Length: 128
Image 1 (tube, rainbow, N blue to C red):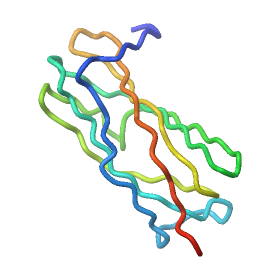
Image 2: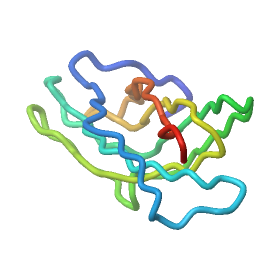
Image 3: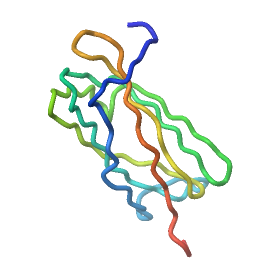
């Protein structure tokens, strides 16, 4: 497959919601958990298989975390043309910030594809 990942026209990521969830478990040094709801939308003409992801979380404290891994929530979703794959997960942060990144995979021809995850804010409510 090589390292050549191309954008596939019609393949996009939508951030459906981001919710501050203070009751979720979080480590003391990163006490603010956020659940995010994501849809990978395939409006291209090709079947795609998502094989991995890379998240970049930038905090106002100056800290940047990069999370890379295989699959998406333990799956390698196959998304047909006109279909969408939705899931939710979470990030924990020490201060407000933003998250962005990309999903990686292959199209039905076996060529490497990538789709950008648009940036979204992780806003810690005032007084928390």
